[in-house]
Image 1: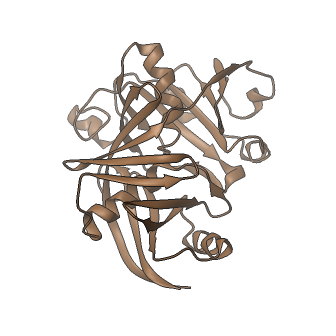
Image 2: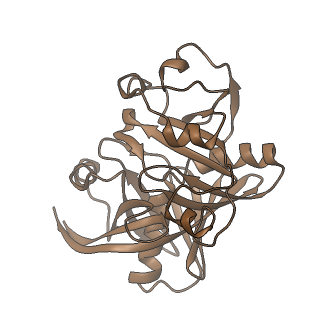
Length: 280
């Protein structure tokens, strides 16, 4: 197989921030084992593959070890490739996926994902959960694929230390989201200019991090799909539909989120880092 390959920084502020994803446009689907080998070789949190199907595209996502049902940042990256490198005409890309139809809308420099909202179930905070991190959560929830733990402060999320040997045994979930209310400040370089969490200078509503060692991703730099879980929770708690978020990984992720009921809109920037040719 020979195809173009792109590496895109998604939900970034500039290059070298956000989450890098590989994108492979395909004419037809290769063997699943080959796609998994390519994802492992890329060694990024996600590699997206897509094939045109009439007026839309079918998309699949692979971590270095498994195929996943939903990935936000790699979908944003795939749409960026179509808009900026494949001469896609129109403002909305439609993807078919294992999670149903996914839309990506181009609005100036920003791309907006339209994803299904997650369903959250409150669960007890257990003694076992106290061993997952070096800080104790105040609330716990289970979504369709992830656990979500709520902590007391933005500082807690910025400084939290995961117990990776314990987390990698949580086979009943893709990963664990940790989150807290934003304190309005941004601990990245933008704080020095008095700006907020995102490049636009917006104030910061909530923060998060995502750990998925059981899925081959010890810590994901930015997890768009996790914001389908985070947004309904923080929308209800803060009493607002439009929210600004930051994922406090080392690279930082910058997102705007909107609770639209059954759907969640997640917006961010994407930038091209690398264009190459893949031979496999």
